[in-house]
Length: 298
Image (cartoon, rainbow, N blue to C red):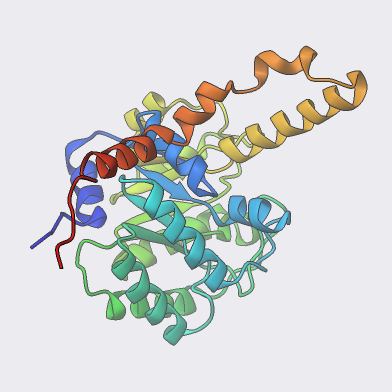
């Protein structure tokens, strides 16, 4: 019988065996595949990036659960590394959370990041985001753990309270969410770079996101690992690099009427084939053709 270790179990092994895990974020299957091909051992699937890619929209909570789930399936099919997905606020009450956890486990998603924003949510980097009470977030976490069947399924509790209620309240909530059973805590948008050390000093596993244009953009992975962070995410790097590349390519095309001036920044056909694993399909087809001598007897 075919069996394999779950991606959730692989993710827990990574945390046990590594000083820090680095996980760039992707919003589609190509991006996630390129993360894996670049040598990273885990990928985060960003709801913000998915909103940008799927809808051409800002991250304002309008991407449906069904759209997210279908995209996750595509990404899982294109990768083998553990995948941590953005669960936003859980898509409603406790019953939607139950459905989400059960389906994500069945899909072999390694874990989720669930947050304490109000529903529907907004991107934490846009404005002062509203958060629910700590008690309501604990109810979300209780629903996650009650629904969880695979004990390896990893749960990151995220608090966005720092921006609207102050950094001390974010620290208080971090302890509450850890006490509720979260495997790891994520405090978004620390007001000062020095606050990163206060987060890392918390007596339980913590992660952080490096976002270009914020107070923590210049930290390196080694610096963060030395502080004590166990997971470092790069949630916007790929999507924003892609946006800039597309904008600049189109501007050059509009200005020059051709691609010559920009061609050194365009993937070659060979590179495109490598990025999309064309060789896998060719090898599979060749294997089928090698076995084509088999005949069906009446």
